[in-house]
Image (cartoon, rainbow, N blue to C red; front, side, top):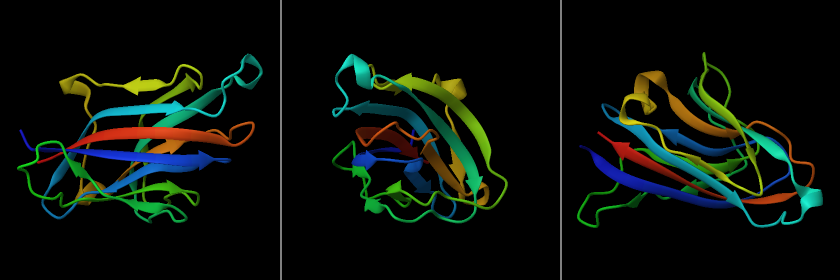
Amino acid sequence: MGRMYSLTTQITATTQLDIFEVIPSDDRIIVVHGLYITQASETGDAQEEFLAIKLMRGHTSSGSGGSSVTPERMNTNDSSSGFTATSGNTTVATGGSPVTLHQEAFNIRAGMQYIPTPETRITANQSTSRLVARLASTPADAITLYATMLVEEI
């Protein structure tokens, strides 16, 4: 087993964006163990909507407009991660030959928990380029998203 890290963010979404963009370091593999998304700004029945999420791999150009995320060690004795991450890129990652590996729509009042079995965990390395968790729908109005991605680095 490799080292486990947690990426967390709080972002305001008004359009489609990359919730997380993770770029593996040289000679390392990253493995997604989970993705959790909730929101706290739309609480009434009238604001209920479904938003699409995509987990993608293969973009070659980084997005922009977001901010760096520090991967936090799950085990305090582990070293810092070799991969880098950003969140909230309003200009999404592009280029390459991206593939969608998982997609679903989630009810914003219920949130989303993506917890794959070991056999179906998504991986990426430097040659397959960046891994992106994308909000693939435009919210009806501004929404505050809270997200956590659990990533293993091997």
